[in-house]
Amino acid sequence: MRLLGTGALAALGFFVGVFVNLLVDRVPRKRPLRPLGGGCRRCVPDPTLGADEVDDAAGPAEDDVDVAGTADDVDAAGPAEEDAPDGPMVGAVLWPGGRCQVCRRAPSPRYPAVQVLTAATFGAVGLRLGADWAVPAYLVLFASLLAISVIDLERNIIPNRIVYPTVFLSVPLLAVAAVAEGDLGRLGQAVVGAAAAWAALLVIHLVSPAGMGFGDVRLSFVLGLFLGWLDLRLVLIGLFLGFLLGSVLGVLLVVLRLRGRRDHIPFGPFLAAGAVLAVFFGDPLMDWWLGG
Image 1 (cartoon, rainbow, N blue to C red):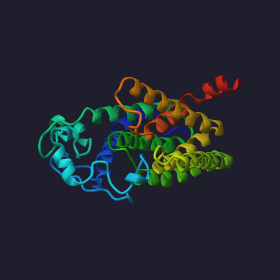
Image 2: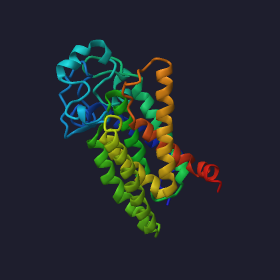
Image 3: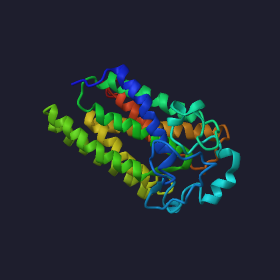
Image 4: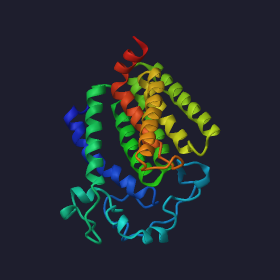
């Protein structure tokens, strides 16, 4: 049963992007998820993160600390952090001039970009799934993937405080969808997909923990859950596309001398991108790849 049209979902996504930016700014810094208040990173020191809060995608060697280090490290960063407000993206929508409430500095372009991307993906979910009862679950997925990807790019971490709630929200939503559609087999299929993706990346993590952090393993469970719901073959396609994108960009960065061969590149965004491509383009890719 369709609750919202594609346009309405896109509009909803624009405002959900406010919350996505809030997660990006506050979850890694262990700050409250208040819709208003606070200041930019120049105004509020960044506390040290604990290993129980985040997983570093770079592996266990850095599990106990945030990439930014201590609050003193962030303060010493100076102007480079000025354009990354700690306040939520409500600022760009509701604050006069879209500036930090405390120091009045303009926010980073990342904020409207995240809102536009959230709107685009929400609208695309409406086009892809139509009246499917699983639409709410996929909206949760894409909002979470955007937050996780931006955090991983900025800090090289995949926070448990986003991954776990995503799982705890998604499983009941998919269960409701399976019951409403009278197809409990899809829920079992989703669980199989989650377990398969988790097991595959766990093996890679055990073989090369420096190259594949356990945060990526946890994220793969979420991706496998949603790809498996659509089609178990999409789990393979989504993971393959994630590795392909990561490899191509990694080689390109090395060729352009923007990164060294030993430099770490966050893998979470590539896993997320591969899953997104599989959700929206997986069917034609399967027809082409498998000759169906």
